Image 1 (tube, rainbow over the protein chains, first blue to last red):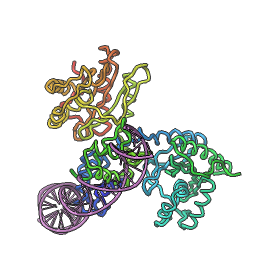
Image 2: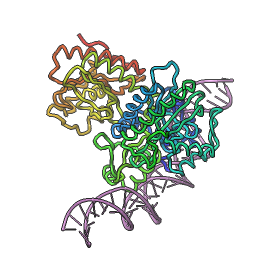
Image 3: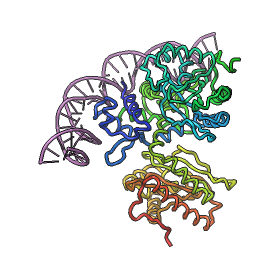
Image 4: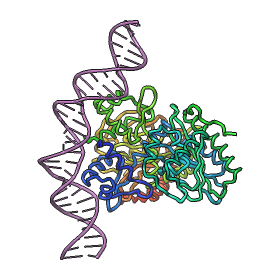
Length: 259
Length: 259
DNA sequence: ACCAATGGTTCGAAAAATGAACCGAAGAAA
DNA sequence: TTTCTTCGGTTCATTTTTCGAACCATTGGT
């Protein structure tokens, strides 16, 4: 494994519930020697990618990410565009909406919007990793991914996160066939109890799937009329977001809901 | 130079005016062999830190920065706090306000706020690098930096960006003495013609300077009364931002304006 | 007082990186 | 149409860097 890849892989151990990590802990988590981790962290620190904090000298992600993220967003304003579209989708459906992007072999929430109307709503966090097999966004992405990517994701151990989580690859593949036909996925309680989500894939300028846009709502609110409204609004704004991002739909992609 | 440092240094060539760079161009800019650059970029790309785009296969910053910046901001909400305080400072002064942070040997704009009142205003961009010798923020930072850092920054070639830019290190040092005494800096037309800026340093929990908060206005509006108003508001909100970020003032720091 | 775990350091051996030279493709110039 | 230049990309003997077992001082818990 290359040295750069090794250093960058250390950054993946930071997440919302573990924002600081000590040297020895990071060595254990990564399986690398403590001296190696120390040296790699020193190089990341010298460039502002990590910094040390507190009496115990733990590490956390550094300020360089703010600048580079701002430059990335200036060049490719995905978050900004997504926020605009999610606000409209939210206004139309009165439910939580979010966009997630593929990053290597994970699906990461880019941004989300809440509807103010209801007392109960589905809550989100950006930068969180979603799974593919048991989220509407994940299923939307797998349905339109290259076959080898889908095979690789379904070959992994699939966590049964809730009693309703489907973990049988054959059943998931059958679901993916239907998602490809309809252009939209849904998931009921597979990732979170009592949450019913719909999602549509998002595409780049070469018709490759890059992520998904989704609407998540408490299952109790999901009357047939409400689901039909959500599907119409999601299709409209999903196609709109792909277009705004300069993307194109793959041939045969379902633009209208089937009769 | 370590391999990780070498790879990360490639990221510094991207900026607002150069959001995509070809392989050969990046080799020329960095002084590294094309094969080396290619290999380093491949490792950055595998982890989502850069991506290739367009027919010419140029590189640009990748989506991984969005996730890691979000995690960083979740852990250390500097941008969020800064935006809150800048909005208030803006409301008080009716001028453009911004916060910049030290990143290695550069000063980088974190965020800014515009006042809606005036037809003319000073415009900003985040993620842009400021210089130390000819900006109010830079002078505020240098005045409270460790002497070796200040010496190193003043030992560099100092660009005469406008006819009013001071480039004589001795004159700048005299200015820094006055900034230390008053706790505030100002700069007239050193970085941008017809712009008069005031700035205050920001400190961390160990009383080290980490950046500056500033107010920038067209020189034509700078009556004595307006300048006094700006200084009072800047001192109040500058001290407030240091406090909100969990920072402490160094001993002897000027908390009140001198009679 | 003792022990365990921390962050940090060293240097001969092992592994990875380097870069001159090369390739095919594409576009510009003659 | 042909030639030339520059591009992104690749190779592998040589060079450089990284590795990690063993060590250190410090700190906190028992």
